[in-house]
Length: 280
Image (cartoon, rainbow, N blue to C red; front, side, top):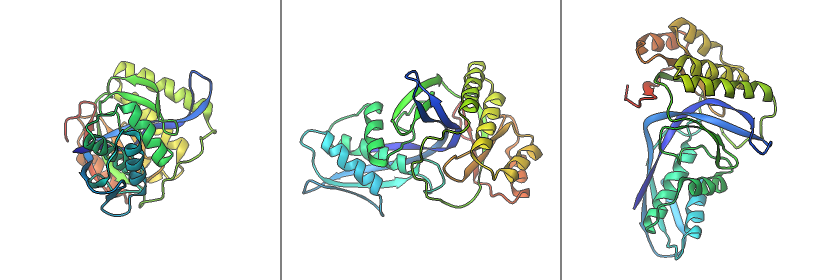
């Protein structure tokens, strides 16, 4: 009786986008982080409530209660979480906890919930959610406050190597109001991302990610200098946290990018491949 959920490495694009209904909504395209997952184990127990641990996990606890309420003849017990990433860096730690918990509780009741239903429960539990309940490699523009996909952009990212870093320590990452600035710029970036994905153009994807990072953060000097020093295709950041990365062609040497980050006083947290999902 278990469930799991992947984490992510910040965003490639985040902003405000108009859907087919004309409503301006926050939307994001996450960068996958292969190999990092939260695992949850559900242990049935006496009483109607479900506790979640170890530690204080209020969002996951709300998700457990909402999932139990969603299921007929729901039983209580305990969810034990393991794995994942450090919280507060913008890597989807809370959403991964929430989704893994939902899956484990549902599994404990003999039910497998669809991704869309998990998304609705996740948003109810944490106010805004990352699209981590979709386990395939499709590239999606996701509405984090509504819990639904605004647009499926591609079947997969073109191959990219990411050399990770952080721009600071953990921060509180609450759900934010829809970002109304730069609406036109975000529409242009989304169109450019669609075109780059259609071409399988990794450099084009990296340019969009860099432009989105510039629109959302003002502290990118060291990261951008490291990218130029290393000859990287671009950069990506978490728009509500401090995780960041240099985006490279898969054939490029990650050692040079790591050295460039360190030369700018930035730590190196690792390297990985996305697109073909081959571990670095």
